[in-house]
Length: 132
Image 1 (cartoon, rainbow, N blue to C red):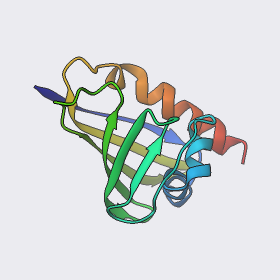
Image 2: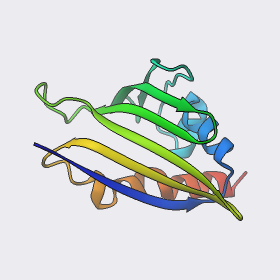
Image 3: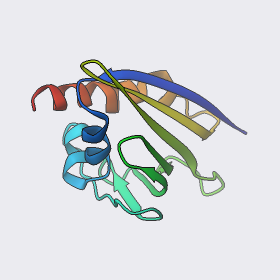
Image 4: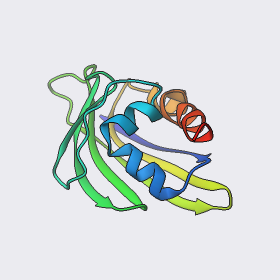
């Protein structure tokens, strides 16, 4: 079995800045507080982030608006299919509302829903972009 959830926050950056950083190795490392990342800007391109903990492929890319990626961690079992994230970027006065829709998450992997996205992405992103 698997589950799905959504989380969102407001980041002090434009949708384009977030989109570009997410798909750039150095930028992704910056928005996660220095975790090593190798990224692709191409549909179908593969990526490795968080020092190899997360791997996947770009499934759909809409510059400055939306990123859809397959997503799996080293904690997934061989029987677990990839999960999927959709990153939606909506401009607001003074920033961007980022919403992550995370689907097909294996049962038991509730840390992503229960603060993982906030701790591992949203909070470091706020610091990264506030310093720019």
